[in-house]
Amino acid sequence: MIRKIIKINEALCNGCGLCAQACHEGAIDMVNGKAKLVREHYCDGLGDCLPACPTGAISFEEREAPAYDEAAVKAAQAAKTTGTSNPSAQNFSLDSQLTQWPVQIKLAPLSAPYFQNADLLIAADCTAYAYGNFHHDFIRGHVTLIGCPKLDSIDYTEKLTAILSQNDIRSILVARMQVPCCGGIERAVRNAVAASGKDIPCQVKIISPNGTILQ
Image (cartoon, rainbow, N blue to C red; front, side, top):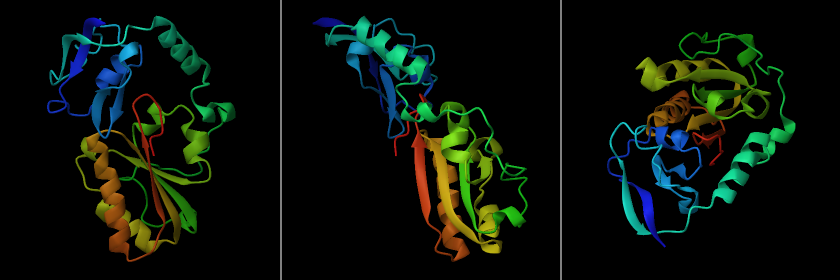
């Protein structure tokens, strides 16, 4: 059918994810750092996402598209509310899994007993807010360091290199958001591992603004 539906200009999209958050129907996802209309039948054509976009990347168009499926949208919303869309929700825990303080990269000591033989979690600030079961699925069993290179306006490479060089770190898990600015924390970790001269296993998990683990 021909109907009004949103159109996203990828060239203008800055990957902030605000449109995906504003879309209550869940029609938009962040894919490779760009907003995409991935569920056309979820888009009601009302444009709640338009005012959320800071770059004007979203507009309306009339074209051939599947009909708006309100039943599917409500079912998806119900699943998200009950947590059935997130397998980890079955293990949801309110208990804090944090084992050390401070957690900010800027405030962390270069050497501490809890770093010895530690599995290190280095996470972007926003990840714990986007992923509801962050303590259970990420912090548990890890020494945790958090930061945001965009807000701190700093390259964490030097500080992280010192921590890795002066301590016996067993492994590193990086948790970052699916937005371009979060690439800074991943690059800092990879550069720090290389600069430390140590062979430390490093895994990266990318989280979408709606709380989905993408990799």
